[in-house]
Length: 264
Image (cartoon, rainbow, N blue to C red; front, side):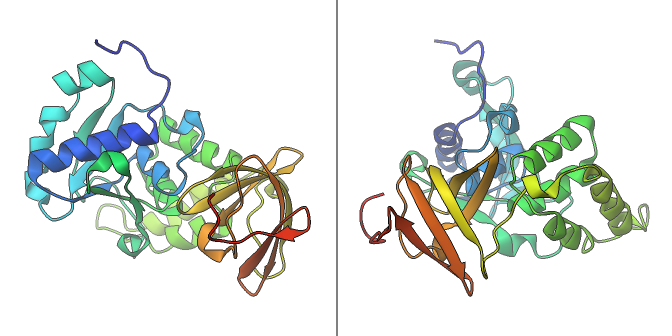
């Protein structure tokens, strides 16, 4: 049955596109550079950041063959059937900060059949959107700020590493100024980021992925904990105290420390 309408692309649907792409190219790694790359680090990303029905990707080891993904691209039978598609791109599609490849986030799961999506780190994604500069890109970046998915200092630091070109000799400085502009008027107390030296956070766990724990700490504020920094796995729907010291955090529920190897 043809899917006529959808609200947002979900994690399992990205897994489906990866599986299909892997079968077409006999490839196991695809770099995802567009909006949907947010699902690498944040599997429960806000729906308004997932409204695009296109997954921008290219084959990591066979980039020149990525055009073959047009068979599951926009307007294909795959697209008409499922309501989402691959947009085959290349490495030059997104302008990214220095060192971005070292920050890629793995996206894999039961539905990928051994294929891995290599997703942009959210901060690199933010910078690439600011470089693109279309209104929808700027709105996307505002959404990332509103939902506490990036840190201002981090995106400014990465933007400063952008390579200047002959036709854009001041690109780094220009994007830094654009980012400073988009943060004008933003209450940074509402875009709280983890203090991994002395931070203390208490509240209900909203989601737990392979990489990130999302916690509601009240008054409309959310924080995201790197799972690898926690000494135990919190359970979605329960309330915890998470206290940091020297880059690591102790996790407690009702005063009782949880075993990291218990089921999540």
